Image (cartoon, rainbow, N blue to C red; front, side):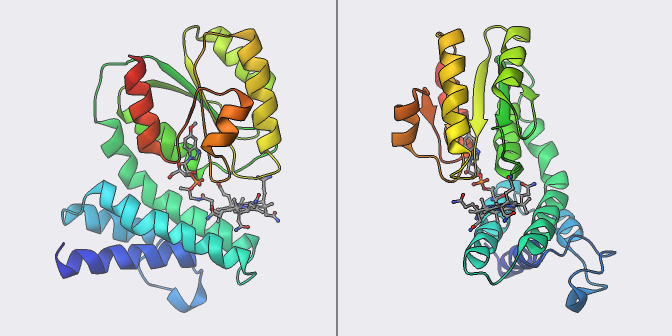
Length: 225
Ligand code: B1M
């Protein structure tokens, strides 16, 4: 990759890490008046940087650094929120690339973040990439109760369901939802993911597949069609 491209990826990553959304955003004060994640992502794409590189080399590492700083009590919830906002502003440019991938729908994929959990960045990435690989998406959002999953499955028979959890505390709600869904719809495939979820946990709760990332989810769904 040419140095200018590496530099722009680093700038995007810094904007996300520090929560610099766009040029108008006064936060963080030290970056007032500077371009933010929104403008720099547009610029990077216009200069030929691939959406995949922006995602994997700028956005995801930035969020991972944010998480590490949060764990060390170096930043707090408001800073995390600004980082998430900056990441979302960058994603507005990236999303259309994933959506233009294929047109034929392979099936319906219902996705949601489990009850009690408000994290949606990872879920949105998964949903976007699955949509880009040809599935119709029913996104139930965050804090999704088991009943809401059931209603969606009844409305879309034959669908595959994906559950995301980002908190160790909400993994228990994932377990409960999977248990109820499997009892009610035994043939339905359930995919689980999210930072604290593991292959072992997936097996233990009776889900069909665990993926640590969106690509694994896309590949699994490909095996079903
Ligand atoms: Co929160 N948070 N957060 N947070 N937050 C974490 C998850 C945490 C690890 C931070 C830390 O302590 N280091 C920690 C959880 C600790 C734990 O449970 N062990 C934590 C905490 C504690 C909390 C609060 C409790 C903080 C508080 O209020 N005291 C609170 C809980 C609120 C709630 O949900 N009820 C909270 C709140 C928030 C914000 C609202 C401020 C914000 C979320 C904004 C939003 O999502 N709209 C936020 C953020 C941004 C984070 C971190 C920094 C980043 C999460 C993220 O978006 N990562 C996070 C630390 C971290 O993970 N590094 C943290 C980027 C995203 C691309 O990755 O979501 O893992 P991820 O998704 C990946 C994979 O996991 C996978 O694909 C994605 C792309 O690779 N994947 C799937 C995800 N879902 C999948 C589903 C699949 C397949 C793959 O199939 C269906």
